[in-house]
Amino acid sequence: MAAIKKTKITILCENVVSNLRGIGEHGFSAYIETEKGSYLFDTGSGLGILYNARIFGKDLHATKQVFLSHGHYDHTGGLARVLEVNHRLDVYAHPAVFDEKFKVTKEQGRIDKEYIGIPYTRSFLERQGATFQLRKTFQEVAHGIFLTGEIPRSTDFERGDTRLFVKKGGRFLPDTLLDDQALIINTRKGLVVVLGCAHAGTINTLQYIAKRMGNSHFLAVIGGTHLGFLEETQLERSIEILHEMDIKFLGFSHCTGVMVAQRLAHEFKGNCVYAAVGTTFEF
Image (cartoon, rainbow, N blue to C red; front, side, top):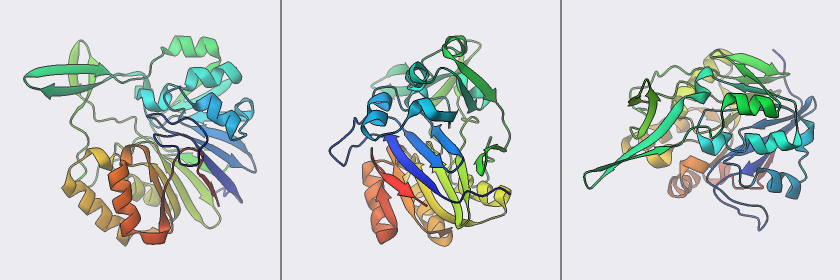
């Protein structure tokens, strides 16, 4: 199995700015550099991707491929902006990335439905230069880089976010987010995992990756966990299992939530940081 000698990951889009440079937004994007090329995992919501790439010296024109973790706007909204710079890009995603996704909330007897899916049509993005590679399965997408595809829901405590729905045939149905996937970088010292939101469950995701890669040593796990939006029981059980896993370093952010990220930093002491805009990781 192909392995990467050296990789550098820079957080381009995230909710928090911690180094006095860059634009923060509700979203996530990571710029990945290896000896074989540069790649984007997610594109944020579209506010900061071009500015932050320029500020941190990342050449989006040289980006070889874009990988989308799932079809929510805060991970796909910057794709059109990237295509303004790089007019021919292969974009890897799950076929459900273009589903009509909503957040449905109930308050004081009122039901609010907010569209949170990708803010562009497939045809528009293709006219801008995107070539979509839509697959459900685990795959190697570049030298030493893999996408999980659909992640089996195996744990009994990771139940997902009940506010999320998908509109199909005029009906609003619970969105199980089968399009949720993670990125894996196979390095010579272990696996580096980049999460978008881990809607499939952080533990489900990591356990599936260990099984598919035949390797349970995680050099690093970086990105969103959605733990900030879920039940306390899921958080406690997730932390318990994370302690049991062979993970050297954690860099959580975005939908992990600031309070949960503080909890994780306390739990894992010097092996955990908040991955804000401009944070870099080298392996």
